[in-house]
Image 1 (cartoon, rainbow, N blue to C red):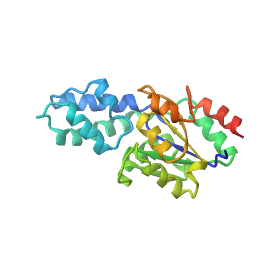
Image 2 (tube, rainbow, N blue to C red; image 1 turned 60 degrees about the vertical axis):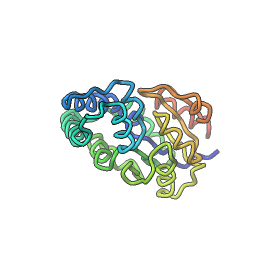
Image 3 (spheres, rainbow, N blue to C red; image 1 turned 90 degrees about the horizontal axis):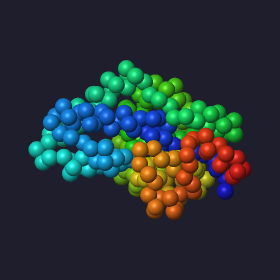
Length: 218
């Protein structure tokens, strides 16, 4: 197996951002008289914005104002992110250096919208590291559908079989698996499902372990 490209998920994989998203969602719901439990939020991880809203709506009271929630939480998230920046996951910078040194292309496939991704990448000075960025508002079907990963592979002219995907969520990992990519899962907020664990190339503890795995493959 020859790995020519590594395609990253963003939230929970590159950035330690899922706890922030969860708190922002919970705070926004609370301001509007609702309650989002940790478990309810966890069920949205890795899905598109539209799918997340549907999942949340099912778990909230019928009279909860989802339209106001959809307007409020991005404002709270933007304010928090611009004030506090983003936290890069341990091992990411070293992995970037390794991939650059070995001329392995880097791409991004995130369920977040373009505006969110661009802000996070800009604040972290990582924007220029990725040959292509595909976001959740640029595909018709979200993870676990493979569309976003297949589009990223097409954008960099690389066969999916020669791509290594790195994910933290079950939905995201399943999308990469469905795309025919070797898939690494580094769990963040939620545990890896038995189905994903069975079909993934590996389940690792951190991004540091990816370098060792790539060295073994070489």
